[in-house]
Image (cartoon, rainbow, N blue to C red; front, side, top):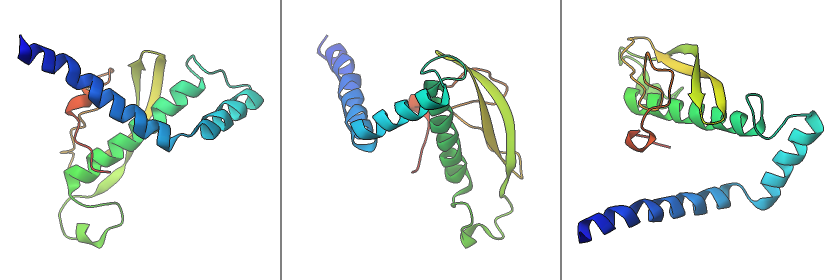
Length: 137
């Protein structure tokens, strides 16, 4: 039973750490500015075209880029990628379902076609297990 308690409390510590990082990255002033910009542009906070979906899109696309970097073993534009036989090869568009409605993503591709994203798996219209995603940022 003690092991079960550890499992129950572990995610809350991880969630708390993630929340603290987010709070540092997005100060109250930054969040206020985002909301103000959205309001002045007539962008709702929720819904398909809302601010939350725009933020979800930005986070997912950044995570996909990080996954591709991990897969290839080098950053975009890094000379280390020359002669590796595989490189970035543009993006494809994909719509995924989220709690706040559909989000259209630009999913990066590699020339060899061997990139299998974990966060948005191929042939899937739902977000994968984000906890299993390998991200090197």
